Image (cartoon, rainbow, N blue to C red; front, side, top):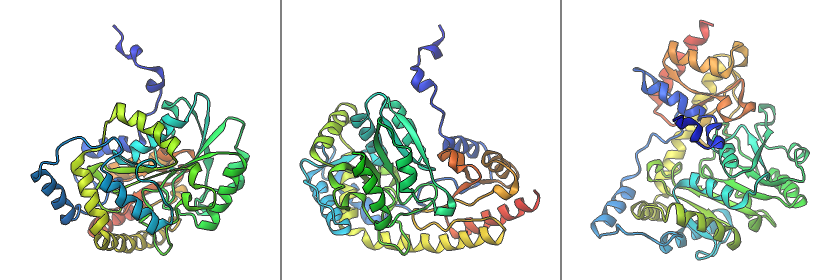
Length: 387
């Protein structure tokens, strides 16, 4: 029996994650410094871990509502109102998910019909395009460039809209580029969205990781709240990646559709993680700001270092990634990354893992210690001298 032929052709034809390919290579080697992981190097603050352990001691080991703990949803609603100026009904417009990634999948499956087109900034997070494909839609990549600070251009978006266009995916601050968009820039996008009656899925998982700019939620723009599925979570800002707690906020019709899928496939997010997230929102602001300040210091060091070694490097204004250009080496992003891994034992992610516009770039995470960054950048400098 040829079992491979029994696999869904849609799944069979999906390319594997370009990030995971390099993770696997790192796992097979010793002495590697990895700048490829999109994960804080900080341990979840103690008081958050303690809250989870205390919940276990009290016997919180049961299912919660499909929507998540009401107490946590109330705290999320308060946070979104105070921090971003957007208000949601905790019973009809908010749901706790298993990370923001589940939210992406739920939104696509709830809203995409066969043949619908979803506009996606290029480059952007690796799961957006596969989620569109798995939902039966067609991903339309919207190129962004370093010369425009990797911001989404409203005219470019509009030029790619067709009668089948239904959704615009937004992800600012952006992974992998670290780009952000201001309120005025997002208003230009909002005008296009309204003119063409689009839905927006806004992944704002890095919203708290901005440097020198106040974070903006797309849902807070005039007329955009009910058009927007706002996704976020606790992984990045609160150093809670392994807890897998995210949330979605949107209008009642969209949320009800997403809850249906969530209740059949997932049931609910782990209650211990939800209790930890509750503590993070109530008392985690100080530690979060300390981590952001540390990332900012590393960010400036990394950008300066790449420029000093002769690589053009856009200055990221959010997240914890640098996206330097390696075009002057004459190597493709894949070739550069593989040679760097084998010859210098530094792992980065080729820009093409995030879309065609990533060619000529590499993603380097600065969510690691300054000592590791210094050593990794010295190795990259030495590697460049051999080319």
